[in-house]
Amino acid sequence: MVSEQATPPRLVSLDQFRGYTVGGMLLVNFLGSFAACPRVLKHTHDYLSYADTIMPQFLFAVGFAMRLSLGRRLQAEGGGAVFRRVAKRLLGLVLVALVVYTVGRRAETWEALVQLGVWGAIEEPLKRHWFQTLMHIAVTSLWVLPVIHCSAAVRLLWMFGSAALHVALSYWFNFVWVNTPPNGIDGGPLGFLTWTIPTIVGTLACDLLVSPPGALQSRSPLLGRAALAAVCLMSLGYAFSCGTRFYDVPASYQASLQQEKLAAHPVVPSREQMQRKQAEANVTAWLAEPPFVAPPNSTQRKWNYWMMSQRSGSLSYLTFSAGFALFVYLLFVVACDVWGWQLAFFKTFGTNALLAYVVHDQVGDAVKPFIPADAPAWYVMAGLLVFFWITWLFVRSFEKRGMFLRV
Figure 1: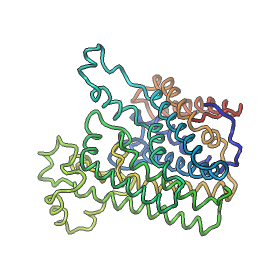
Figure 2: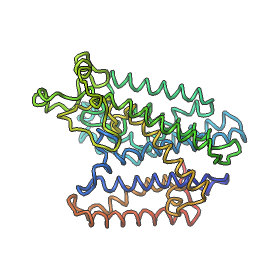
Figure 3: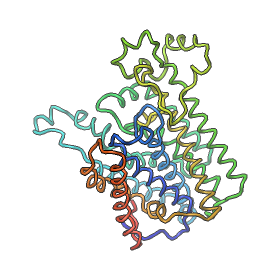
Figure 4: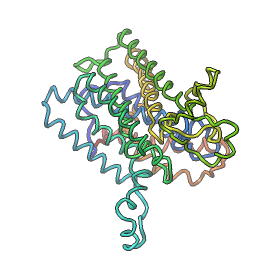
């Protein structure tokens, strides 16, 4: 629905952070389809690129905002009605996602549809269409809603349990299923289990940085503790990613396995894989490439669960990205809530993020046909500026009228 701006005071840092995230989304979603786009701005699914940091920041902001707004509402109204209303709104977002992420005709005739069966008809939409950003936000929010008002300990247990369940299901079938044609997007239907990580981290950041009345606590010790937590999360995520080195392919095996992209035993290495790695005397042979540094290709290292992969929704990816989102948000806390800085550009997108998300695809579809995939970088950048400008005009026109798209 379209509503007026909420009356409770807003956190400038959260709106600016969300606006930055929307801007990053526009950047990578537009540039990613052109040859001139650097790899670090693309989703390549085998390492953490800048493009892969955007969606976890959305989930972090969602968790932060849910914890903040529910705290205010529970103080004012009490429990049951508030949770029912939030659940209805999130189910409404599910419906919006189903409408936004349309699918092609599943069969040309009734007979063909009957032959496909229920699973044949919905498998590709589940993996390739429906479970994108809006659907993941809705389903993940519904998943954490039962514990959003609970203590930090309960929320952490919920996060650990969700992560462990994702590893177990990936071992059982999900990693291979999501990474075989038709390939999944953003972890597929079970991705919400690890998208829970940045969402819960967002709720914990809200606890640490916002006092009960809603005023931001900018004291240095609190910011220092949050920064330490961000570094610990990023370090843990990187440590998880080092498991990818069990799947290095010896030179003598590379030719025979060249056609295989996915590793054998991609979640829990086999005894042979472990023994081969244990024979490595060099410490660096156990260390994965740092985030934002591309790994070897699949001839030299097979795809596995422990690499940072947005397609797989892997544990290493979401753990590191949750810490990275927290760190970036802290920069906005210092810049906006401590020093008083803000950009009108980020404010426009940050206070109407859903509208920006819905509009940007339509604008992109209007601009991209005039830019060949192999266009030179200067021409692609000119198209990017036109794309940003038109999208901003739409969102800004709503902002000037005091109209904000909410679910």
